[in-house]
Length: 135
Image (cartoon, rainbow, N blue to C red; front, top):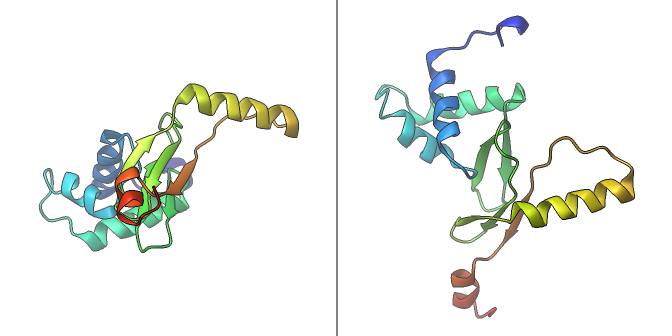
């Protein structure tokens, strides 16, 4: 960041550190909860401004699920794909082996040399699907 003329402020460092603690995409409220343990002065507006900055800088990715639930993931993570319930927000990882097979197949048919892949699959978890009569 410094090479491009930006400072690593305390808030940016706290938000990035908080995001490294999670293994799944998280909401701004989850990040605020984690950050507030170190800095009680940080508010949700600061977290959102910081997340927008970090996303624009390419350090994190944001996912919008169409239900007002925006989640954030650090781009330096393990690239594990996730299943996320559109109803309750429950997050589960997809098997890395299964994901790797799919990525290898896509790379082979497209001719791309894939260096990094991150996937979010939206749907309903078993409990929410059962509540809605879809199971």
